[in-house]
Image 1 (cartoon, rainbow, N blue to C red):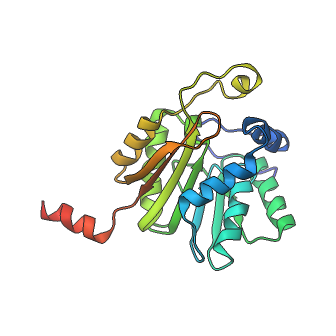
Image 2: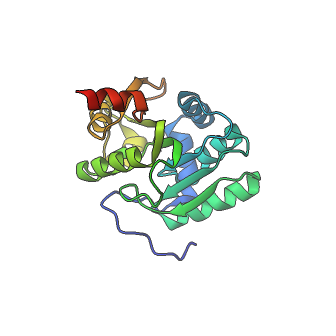
Amino acid sequence: MDQQAAPRTHGLVLHWAARYDLLAWLLTHGRERELRETIVRLASLKRGDDVLDIGCGTGTLAITASQHVAGRGAVTGIDASPSMIARANRKATKAGVRATFQVAVAEALPFPDRHFDVVFSTLMLHHLPRKTRQECAKEIERVLKVGGRVVAVDFGRTERRGLLAHFHRHGHVAIEDMVNLFVAAGLTPTRTGPVGMNDLNFVVAEAPRPEALDRGGDG
């Protein structure tokens, strides 16, 4: 897997898997586990949910999610970096969980329509240019089941300085931009706000339910 060629994407791809977990620890000031559990709570995961983690990195969130869906649901992580996926697979094997990982890009998800109950996008959207971000949001809407939900977490506009600013000088996504992104893709934001850690914000959005589609058709 480490030798597999990375797919073509317009987004920024991080290949330094060996240092990624340390960076995540630094970015959260040692509160990475708390962040993961917060994201899982925002998603309201339940037994049997099928979950997709886009830009999964070394798989830590996907592994946590797999423990919450209790073996009846399937958890899949994708990342454009083969080295990240290789490390994620090793971590899942060591943890004894059934999360699976594959190399893929956010703007062309290799899954059928209406396949997932929950999609995660954590600290990933700011790696994508605007057009690719829009393509990713449309793909999320496509693969979500009716009534399914996406949980997006990303950096806000707060200025960062020092070492962390060096690693994340490439951007942020304002919370209103995340909201507008999902609305344009046909999803309905239901909750937004600060995560309560650094300058991280979250948006939870849902795929339309049948009754909402029916009301739209009546108009």
